[in-house]
Length: 372
Image 1 (spheres, helix red, strand yellow):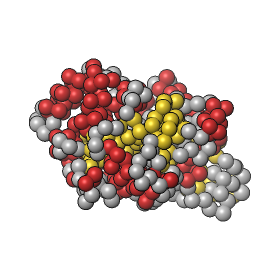
Image 2 (cartoon, rainbow, N blue to C red; image 1 turned 60 degrees about the vertical axis):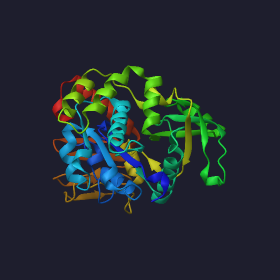
Image 3 (cartoon, rainbow, N blue to C red; image 1 turned 30 degrees about the horizontal axis):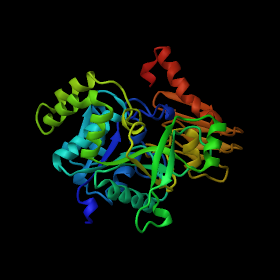
Image 4 (cartoon, rainbow, N blue to C red; image 1 turned 45 degrees about the horizontal axis):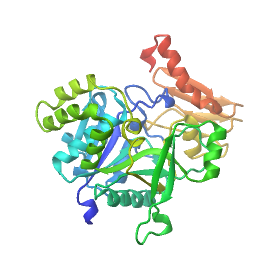
């Protein structure tokens, strides 16, 4: 084991709800626990991928307490003590801080790479090379490291990171570049995204961060000091019976805030490594279609829970279909998303996949939460 991975830990964030993939992704079983292409769930894929670099004993999962049992079932190799049960949703800043504290309790010199449980990527070897490089750069504790995904088009669904000059590293090859981060940009409109792409010094923000625990705790102290006391309380309670009660108190007293807003946008020691490994956050049904295996009529069938009813198409083209217990028969329709899931059938044009989030909001306003 090389020096820079000796103290390496992974924190997998698995508490999200994934409402844009409703109705398959539900409050009780969000998208990270689904098979959206392939024989394994997105969570299982993420954990097995990073386990090639970091041993299972040093993989920590931060999830909602409702999902702990599901995590244990899907990842039996994870130490149950490394599954952190968040009592409520408080976004990524607190989740990443707690993951870092748990790693530090096991190893005071811990370096943590934070990874999502619900993303896909095509080039696993390149991904592991980039994460390995980020662990190497973070090992000294001088810098916080992010991976910026190389844009493949002017996407309006992602935030962007603007970089400045190339940071010189001795012996760097072209595929080993490291940049100083200039600023973070919110999700842009299409003309702005096209401008970013033309300028060439912008990357997609995939929320892939690596840091030495001492460095991120210093950043919290400097940029988000109101969390100091809460993090100290959590740190003292780790590996004691008081841990979950303390977590409950801290979460109730904490705001919802992302790591970007709390730390990254303010930090002056953030470096970016470009990542070109076919990444996507699988945030829309249209993305699931693009990533899926298509038959002769351009149809993608998603079987998220193994054996399900058949799909029969007569003159149908370019549809995405996810059956449940009933046969789905399509006649002469094109470019649709048809999802049969539990007690909901959802039908929409693929081009309006982004509006599914609006449907979820509409169900909430009509007090139909039992369907979410």
